[in-house]
Image 1 (cartoon, rainbow, N blue to C red):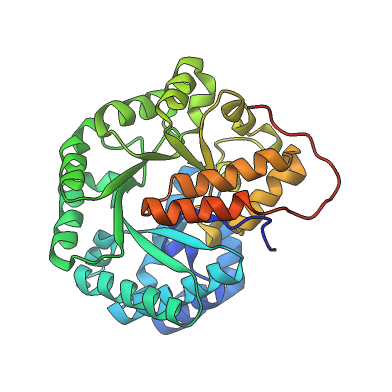
Image 2 (image 1 turned 90 degrees about the vertical axis):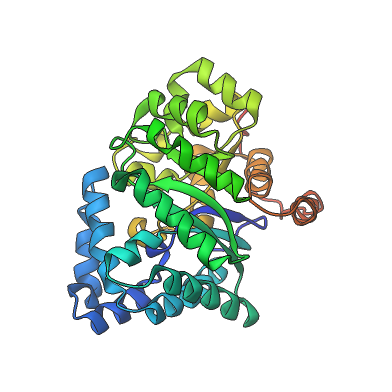
Length: 340
C-alpha cells in the first residue's frame, strides 16, 4: 500500500516493528515457539487489553540473544518500513530490556545504529532512535537509559520517551529524568492518556513538559484539555488500530480522532507496533479515509503534522513540508473532510 504523501512515523517500537519473517528467524535461533508463525498469530489474536498486549511484548523480547541479533533486526526493520511506503522513522529502543536479558546494552544500541545506517546505505529509509524507558521499572531504570546514551553518544539518538504501563509508577517520579534528558540535548515524548485517562495526560504535560505525546486520546473527553493541547501545539501521535486492539476504543468508527481534530489539536498517525497489530503506517492512514471518511484536506494535514512533530532539523522539516505542498494526489471519489 503506497501512501498518497510522504510520511514520517515517530511512534514505532523496535520489537514491535520486526517483520514477521525476522521474528521467525530469531525464534528458530532461540528455540522459541514463535519460530512457528501460526503460534505467534494465535498469540497476537488473543490481545484484548493492556495486560495481554504487554504480556505478548514481553514474550518477544527474549528472542534477542546477542547484540548481533539487534543489528540484524534493525536492518530488517528499516527495509520493511521502506517497502511499506514510509519515508522516515523514529523508533523507540529500550536499552534496559537488553540489560535485563544479560546483554551489554551499549553494544546492543550500537548494533541497532549500525543496522539502521547500513540498511539506509542500501536503499532503506532513514531511521533515528528514541531512547525508551519502561515506566513500570521506575526512575532508576530510566536514569540508566540516559547513562547508556552518555556512554555511546550516537548521533542517531534524537529523543527520549517513557513507555510501558502508564498506570504503574507516578508521573512525578520521572520529572528529574526528563530534565536530565533535555539537558543532554534530547527532545522528549511520553506515552500518556491512553490507558490512564485525562489525569495521566495532564500530569505528563505539567510535570514532564514533553515535546509531543504518544496516544493522548483521553483528551477527547475534556474540552479544556483539548484547548490546551491546541494552544500549545502539542502533537498527539495516535495509533488507531493499536487503540482498538488494546481495548481503549471499541472500533475505528468509534475512535475520538475526529473530535480531537475538530478541536484544533495537532495529530499525527503512527503504527505503534506493526508486528503486534498487523498494520503499517500507510494502512493506518488508509483506514481513516475508508472508515472515517477523511477527505484530502485532512489527510494532507495529517501528513504535514508527521513532519512538523518529527525530531528533525528545521531545514529537513521544511523540505519535507514543501514536498507535500507541491504534491497533487490523483483525483478519486470525493470524501468529506473533517472540519478543523
